[in-house]
Length: 329
View 1 (spheres, rainbow, N blue to C red):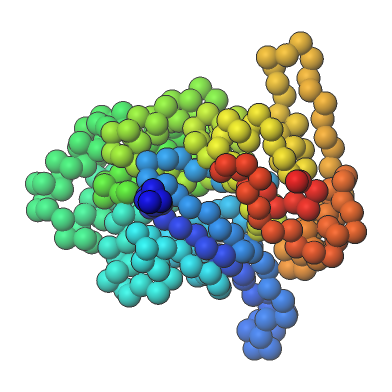
View 2 (cartoon, one colour):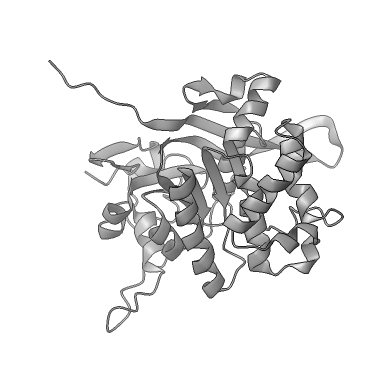
């Protein structure tokens, strides 16, 4: 008798596509003249309780992927399954309930906070929208969340401009946590902070994950940050995931040439001298007209004819380690 396979995936992204129209000088009158392929055939899973890191250069499509999962950016193809329910086909009421369970922490907390509202009003707003508790219960909930993220009760009455960058990011965490979500999508949550403040926020995230039993999708371009916080990592390039593996496995032996180049750009100060740097030639191709075959072949130092002609399938070369490259056996 074969053992029963337990599916512990909380959210599944299958062949996700997201593209945006590009209009000419006459706007929408003549229709779109081209499309920006921001996300192309992206597939991965979030397992309950883990932190999945999504890494890539600016413009790789990682933030668009996070917004498409939330439904903030419409998907042009593929599926997002939350507890085996298709998010892209949900009704308005189902989407309202889904967004209680999946929350977003924005990259720039200041631009996502209403400068005309006090902090208490902003944190209570989602509770009012979802009709949770009376006024006293909502206020008590806000005080509790402020305490959890390391802020004081008097911050309830202040405005966003009265806080530092680190405190604003704590407010962003508080706003996401107020609904007791199952999944939290963190879009570059520490990129605008000092290194010392980054470590405080990252340690807080790990503590909150244990306390609230959260599943995290951590989007970043910072290799050292994603190594510290992630259980598994997906590497994105030009709208596609080119490699995915458990964190230790990926850093011990990156297989895709792009991953190797990305990791080589991070100085290793534990050695007596810096490791050899892999320098990529040329510019990142335009997502309006991506190259044929492997999207990385125009900059890959090992590219062959098959790389230019055929799209490499994502293959599992070791347990949990997948890579999209013709040259990896």
